[in-house]
Image (cartoon, rainbow over all chains, first blue to last red; front, side, top):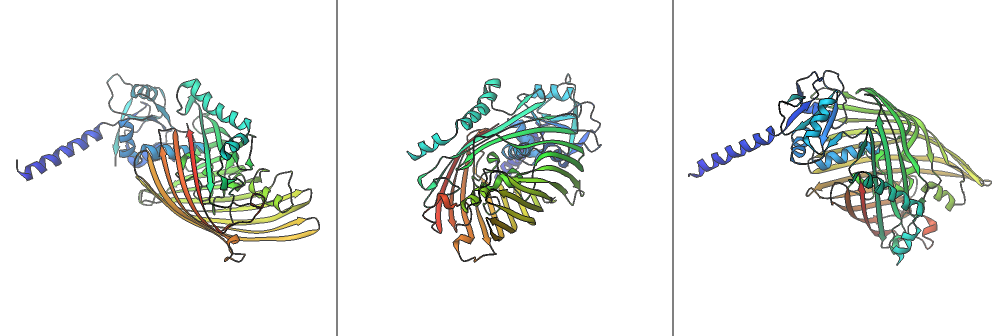
Length: 141
Length: 392
């Protein structure tokens, strides 16, 4: 294999790996949420607590996973924070009395169940099935 | 040996409180994650510090022998009552040398009604937003630093600056995709100097022993611009504060004085940078018996800090803090305090952490008390601080 072919294959595999990482995240929302797509800036504002409403003015309830690779990829890709900084920023909000930390779940199934039952809830998982009564949001830049 | 004696000095109430903080949550749930009990969220933190100084006793601790008289703990309970209303209370207990004690103090207790993202109202006992860290200065768990820059955030006076009883209006105004977001906070109320605060001890050292708290009206605001450059925030705060108090042997009167602050911070990925400039003018009158003494200070302080997260668990950084009283002879060590600081923090997991910090101090204006340094002060000293803590 020539060096050029090897390099092309390496770049291609890196590209598909990145895409797979990005596809690992599915944004889910309660079926009552009117919007069908959301910008990363809006996601960041909602998940960092500086905004409490979606772009259409309806109330947003962000929920998170407690940890794991899906949590890390979501924070890095859509919020631009590491789990450590995300946690630290929220602790600052909570201990100064300026807000409440998003509800956090141990498992994706618990998160999906909560999102399905809570008006305005928005969260993220690695995959959903057709039985899940949630809406998928498209993330746009 | 001295460290063990110091531990015994910690009040039994304080230890009981800290134990309850930790055990209640752990035994109820089996984890230390923040608890959400049918919508009611419970969070808390505790920390234990150690201080050793090469000379001079710092913050009323016998730090030149090594002191463990530094314990902090807080628990808060909050709940959302509907989409827009949030209520909560945080109780705090701390022992810092001779400051604090066994009494639980209400750190904040407020109702918060957010009409929309542009306008909200918060009322009760509310943390005062001023500068980068005023409202969060007592939350050890969120900082790399053990001691924040003391020229701007003196830990022995935190009870006075932390909160006010009154109300705030706040909100965020989006300036569009290319211009960022403007955050504002305006407040008015009453701020009180607790009887276990450093100012009370400083007055006692000159023979003015207060048996009732002193304080006065306060109002001010903060405006910060979250710039389009992600992670960069620039802001400014201003506070007007009056202080009046009467003791059996005299009184203190300070008219409302303006304290401004200007700051910038940049936080992205593993990097954190921040700088702040503050000014605190004081033009008070102290009356002891028939003697009327002017008390004039023109405090100017600034700091610059930077840190880097070397791994998920380890963070290191450094800052320089500068304070000088321009109303006095600035060549005298008693009128300035300059501090070079190096810090490291290790997070064992999401809840437990340890910190270590070195201070290279020049000048003696901040953090020293006559009664705990009866033989005088040396102008330069070094200090080692360490802390362990957990939060949920």
